[in-house]
Image (cartoon, rainbow, N blue to C red; front, top):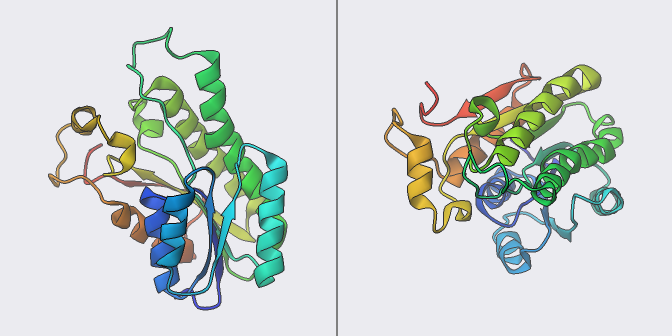
Length: 242
């Protein structure tokens, strides 16, 4: 499916990002595994890749680091076909704790979840446009749809990711397709120590299960290849938001 294709996955060290890197590589892709701080986890993910790839440290909050990462990808492989903007952060905070939603927390989440995503797209677009079947997938969240999540800043920034996706679908057409995946509850390290909160937020899930990172990775891979999709927010939540 992805033979001879080059894919950059941000936040590729753990969870959804790690599962996506491994799945893409197993399908033939050459994967750039981006990470910011989780070196050991990123190294472990990289070692499990089926094909040769690239392990690259960059903090997407800083545009110059993003540009250097894209340049390294081009120098290594000579092309970039797909971009998966998975890197994101959260902050556990009661939804009615307004005082806890400090300027520092707002800026931190906005800089990574929204601006960092845009920086990656901005740097990648000139190279993606050179391809014949280029696509971007942004990882949003059902929090960006329902407004209910691990905190107000998180829900708002994920809503912004969805809005960014729709705006860029106009800007990038017809050369590049761009979509968002909006996962519901996913069993990742984000919820360590907060499992009960995850279950409460998940509510009455129709399929009586929590998604695995591999579930979301499969949807990301499908969305990258689907030529009829752009500007869509694709919910993957086991019926959580029905």
